Image (cartoon, rainbow, N blue to C red; front, side, top):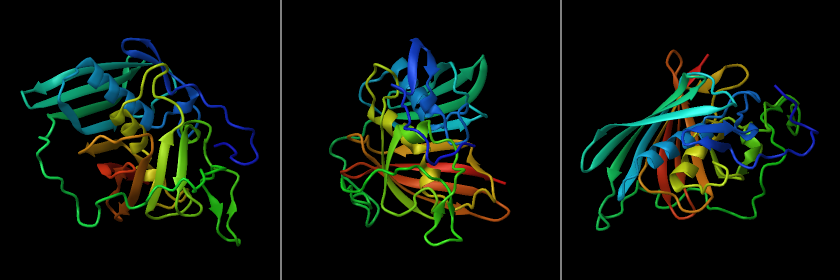
Length: 288
């Protein structure tokens, strides 16, 4: 763990990744998650694998409807190789598969269902009361600075604790705007507007589905309900169901977590843009 207070200004990488060849990428320090500088946050690598699957097997008129990204262990901040394939294909559906490798060892797997896009004549439908994002975007809400993950609640007002996790990687590469005070340290449902400060791959344009995947793994961070460090909590997968591609850079995460003693925990979120909701996220959580 590193000290998060009174540190010099952070230096962002130019991108999360740099392409070395068709299927090999160098990882930048900005991919590192809060666990430390050598372990990637799952957002960037899940987006990278999604991009690779869609680029390797383009199909006009098809929509990425569901992607599951399975973490097999630590994804190092290092050179990564991607392998993709088509598992199943019809005139209306595709099932794509991807593997993320480091030193010839698989560190993550993914599967994506891609469907022929729905007809433009299909009537629009939403859950009752969710016709637009639950938190309206407000340019007046400042970005979260400094980035603090833990507070001492025994004093008034609560004081930031010096040990806060690794904030120089992914956490700093994302701009966070919360409605509530003391974000990240507040246990319970949370809502945040987020956008990446850097592109996924150096010199290559970001895609709407890629932007969605970069942010989806932050579902658990925005809506924490497991007391840390009393418990270890970490997700082993991310599943995103996307019914509409987002527009623009800013994305809403409206998140919460449910827990059951003797069972497991599940984090889930609704994601949206400035216009409307667009996707749902589920994360299975290991709690110890």
